[in-house]
Image 1 (cartoon, helix red, strand yellow):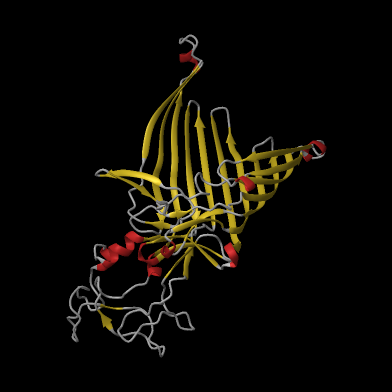
Image 2 (spheres, helix red, strand yellow):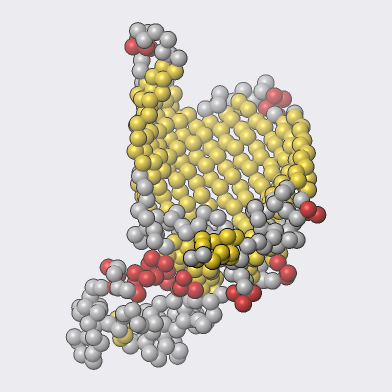
Length: 434
C-alpha cells in the first residue's frame, strides 16, 4: 500500500497582485491487493486499486489584466498607436480545478490479458475566457472569470496477448473513453456565454445546464409531431432566433484499437482511431450549397427534369418539392426553385455528425538478425521501420472534408471552414543501438 501527497504555491506575474498567489495540492493512494491473494488465485497476475484527489491552479494569459496602447507602423511621419480589441480585466482570479479519480488495474494468466478502468470527476471554477461583448463598448471581446464547469467520465483500456509462440506473437490494446461535461454556473448569473461567433450567424457557446460547446444558429420550424413545416411559398419555415442548439462539439465517446504482430524478425503494427458523435458545422458546405458547386445541387427531379430548369406547371418543370408538411399537416406538394437566392435551408442543415473511423498509424519493422549483427562489432541492434500516419479515413459523415479539421484548437471548436485535405505522412526510420 502506498500513500503520497504534494503541495505547491505559485505566484503569477500575469494576474493582479491581490490574486497572484494560489495554492494547490494532491493526495494519492494505492493498494496492490493481489499480494494478499496470489496463493489462493494463481491465475491472478496483479491487481491494484488506486484513488487520488487533487487541486490545480492556472493563471491568466499574458497581458490580460491591463489595457495598453501598442505602436503601429508610421503613417508618413505620423506616430500611430492602437487600443486592444479585447478588453483586459484587472480583477481576474486564477482558474481552479478540483478532481477526484478512482481506478482498478488487473492482469491475469501471467499478464496475458488485463484491463485498467478509471472513473473521474473534475470541477473547474473561475475559468478565464475572452467572451464576446457588444462592439458599442469599443471592444469585441473581454476577459472574464466565466463560471463553473464539471467533467465526469470513464476511461477503459484492455490488453491481451492471444497468441505467443517462439516465432509468432500477437498483441492487442483497446481503449475507450467517455466524458460528459456540464456548465454549472456562468458569469453574473447569465444562462448563455458566447465563446465565439462565425459567418452565417453560427456561434459556439457555454450554455447553462448543458454540455460545454453548444453550437447555435437558426433551424427548421417543426409541428408537434416533429415534422418540418413548409410555408405557403413552398420553402422551409426557418426560426427567426439564432439561439437554437444545433449540436455540441463533444463526442459521445472515443476509442482506439492497436494491433501488433511479430513473426521472427518482422513486426507489423497499426492503430484504428474511432470517434462517435459530436457535431461539426461546415461553412464550406453552407457556401458551396448556396453557390451551386456541389453535386447535390444538380441532377434530376422526381419528374426526370434538371432541378435547375425553371418551375412550370407541366411535366417539363424543374425545381424540387421539399420534404415536409404544411400548417394543416398535409404533405407538401409545391414545387420551388433552388438557387442562391432561395430561402431553402437554415444553418441546421449544415450541422453534421462528427463521427469517424481512421487508420491513424501503421508501422512495418525489420530487425536485423543476431547472425548479421555478430559481424558488426559494437552494434547491438538495427531496426528499419516504414511508417505511415493518417493513412485512411475509413468512415465519416462530413462530405468532402476531415471532421477533425477545425477553425480552432482552443475553446471554440466544432466549426469547419476552408478545410485543407488531410495530410498523409509516410516515412522511413532507422534505429541503431550499441
